[in-house]
Length: 389
Ligand code: NOJ
Ligand code: NOJ
Image (spheres, rainbow, N blue to C red):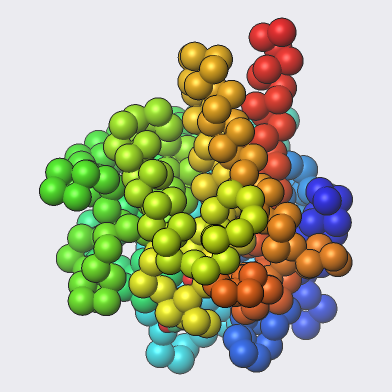
């Protein structure tokens, strides 16, 4: 399964009609039209390209950095929360939910991991020129994104689902992680005032994240000052799980009771929501129970995220029996994904809540990335187990 997913993922990078470094969200050009470089999707996909060394990963990251430079220049430093770009690099200018401030944070995070590896290899000149110049105003991609995040994180923005304006657990968690990793890079490149400033923001963001631990609900809620309060009434959203994962648990550890309670509630709610969950292995997971987009279906990337977090729980549990139970649980989400995956193994965005057949954007790049990440988390658990034995 893995190698074919990699092939399909790589096919969505560098489209012939786009600038190098473009990552299309999906080849689908209508119903829905996803033929764009979405900042969030692209950053998450490129993070997997780098961490799993897919294709010529160094070259792909270099291209990604150069496309990012173009995107930033065409938007301007005040508008780095722009959610998507045409494949020629121009910002999409039609009405859309903007800004989406998770984008620059995720992008900085992906590029920072790569920059650290380049520095380890002695490629300091390129890093200082293209990625982190330590200047203000900056012309380098990571520094520009970090400055944007450091100055705008407290402002309301659209959520990762592009629907709700407010303050979001997801966006804040990934912003904190981006600034924390950014501070390490700043230290390494002697930009020590910036490192101090970024760390101050991390502290403030963590403080602000406390407000999402809802004592009245008893779980982590996704959004405060929600512009669509009447529509999203459950306060349950898998974006919280994605936020924990994509911020590498900067705020709460996998075994934190708040996390466990949130996972249980999410699963309970999706179990009831989808007809398809009456049969088959595991539980199909969607974005949030009230979702109506494309009929409101479970998604591959959200089901994969639930699986992944259970494997992370398995890794973090000191008790071997508990660890085994969490790993088994993670496996059930992987089985669910396999259950709905067509024979050709091409993954759309969603599968239908009633029949289970695939629907929505075809060959969604983020779907491939999310299943690869899930498989990787499972491999890590297996490797840990082998070490113990
Ligand atoms: C497109 C967005 O990307 C998606 O998240 C949203 O649900 C639909 N528009 C409907 O608003
Ligand atoms: C809709 C999703 O809600 C959003 O998160 C994503 O960025 C776009 N589709 C593109 O895949």
